[in-house]
Image 1 (cartoon, rainbow, N blue to C red):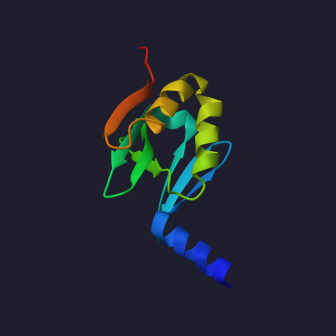
Image 2 (image 1 turned 120 degrees about the vertical axis):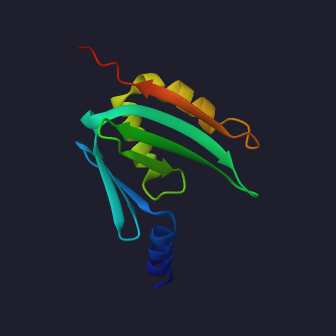
Image 3 (image 1 turned 180 degrees about the horizontal axis):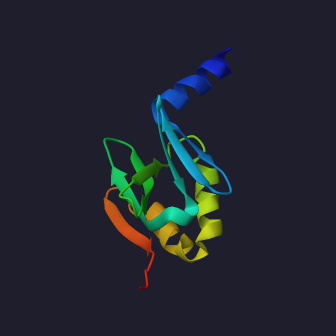
Length: 118
């Protein structure tokens, strides 16, 4: 009983990210946002210190103006992170550098951006 309540509470408090071969869905409460991997035009990562705790986040953008933020407290973050590394292996080193950076310093960087040719 306690475990199921704990899972429910964590999902409610931190949200969930579900990964598929096609993309991902970020759910928080009754709201959800989805993005296909092929629609991703930019990937940013950042670290934000707060009172006593810092958190890392990744923000993915699409051409239609949607951006979805997934932080490391989100349930399913590790699977999301692995899926991003699988799709964009060239950003892993910079991602890890931001993730392991100084906990007292806020940081936000663009790791990848699609270059459109016309």
